Image 1: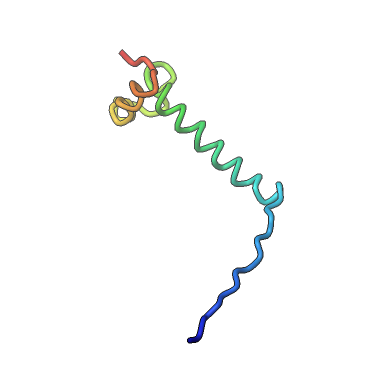
Image 2: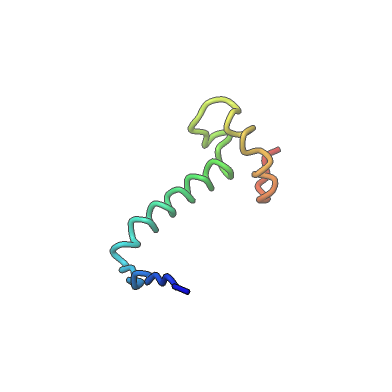
Length: 68
């Protein structure tokens, strides 16, 4: 009976310089999502109309943001 063995490549640790762009990108996306869910209405509105408000309406209530 013959066994086939495979060897995985050794894991290489990531450096802070490699992680920094991803951390910044995820942080920016998180802040944008927080704005659109929590503050995109009324005087701070960047987009005219109620489309964004209605799209994130249930998520707004789920996260505890008042909107009425």
